[in-house]
Amino acid sequence: MSNLAEKILVTPDIAGPISKANEDGKLLSISEMSDTFDVTLRTLRFYEEKGLLNPVRKGARRYYRPHDVSRMKVILQAKKIGLTLGEIRKVISIVESNLPRVDQLRKLRAICAEQEDILREHQTQVAEQIVEMQGVVASLDSLISTT
Image 1 (tube, rainbow, N blue to C red):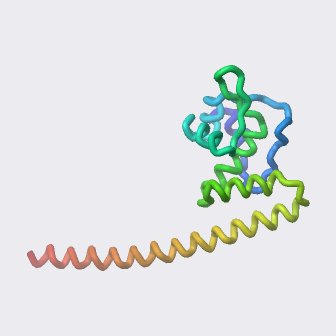
Image 2: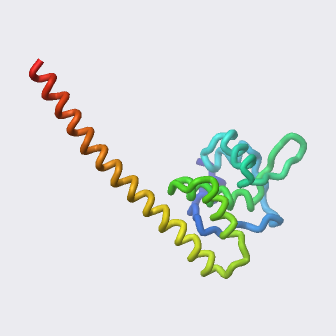
Image 3: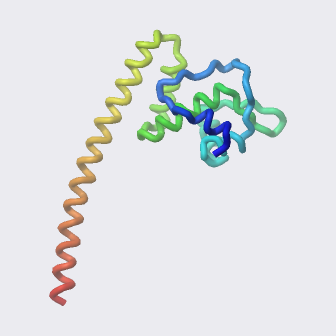
């Protein structure tokens, strides 16, 4: 990982803050952005198509501003906890809103609590599937030993 990547990825944070869109700072090429976040070029283009990132274009090249870097941190953490693209869009809109910070945090907490409930339900379903699979494997082992 490059020094730049280490500096940028110190703490991905779903709560932002996201740099202002017009904020000056170092521009990253698409390959630098890809290396920094360990994602493919296609992933970056996909997020651009979906309106989650908005790099500046100079000729045929894309350049990512601090705003895009901040957004990418939020996107990746939101993705890591299983949020959908629509939910990620909602998270970004909350973090970039003019709401008081405490209201932003409350809204984000509600989204995360709901996602935690969904993940716990999945965890329960997976545990049940594992028990079922153990029974199937035991039955197969029994059939194998008697054959």
